[in-house]
Length: 383
Image: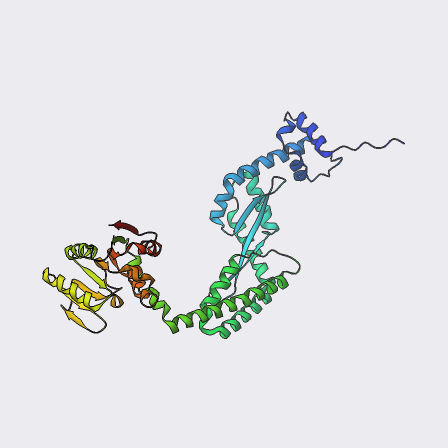
């Protein structure tokens, strides 16, 4: 008995395309087979059906290029992706709020429903995104409402769990909500037989992590409050807002580097001199007075001079990190590395709010200054 000859459906379609005057190589015959719903073998079909399928594919591609974007403007919750058979795979984004004020959306990507799918197919074939748009909007709303009804108990249970979590963590609720919101935005569920259990199991893990994050943030906040670290950081804000220029006057003792820096300071409309010792602060306060400037002096023990001076001489520990000035001079900058008092030079270098900061010291401090300077600031070496 002779064995029946088997014909590949893609070969059958190649013959049909040839009869229609279309080059078989120009068509994805496997996609065409899928579009026609034919088996892999012996899928015989009329030429008219092949021609109709080709016209439908062309129409869907044209709609995908322009019509889908126009439809998204009218219906943002609707999404489309091209399928292998040339059709468009439509998904509806359903959002179910987990808080009474509409926050924390549980998101679901679902098929748009039979009624909506029929309208969308007609739209695509006619390449008309306005075709029965109101009917489509109503059909999608009904699909979304159906999922809301199906998941009503699940959503109600989640809302109760979240309310219990918020009551438990108290003042840390904003951090909990923020973490939960970020996690929900990164997760999109899809319909499945066990969808309710999947959502509850997934959100249980997310809620647990959100509570941990909230408690950790609470601990950090209490620590900042205890040590005053937040206010300490705030001291550097005025300086960080300036595009400061840092000039290094380098040289050995009695080389004239501080004198040159004071000449620049005296010519500026406002400025401050930061000294390692009270005697040096006093000496340069008097030098500023001799130049006819409205000068003042501040140390840990006394305040001298004008009540609102344009120029001040200070000991380094009393540096004013709040009041912006034109020029600041930091003397003996190599004290940055001092284990006992180096913090004061570090504070001044990082935080003095001056457009020009002149640091004076020996050459072994240059590397420290360059490392400490913000990348946005310029360090200029002056011998």
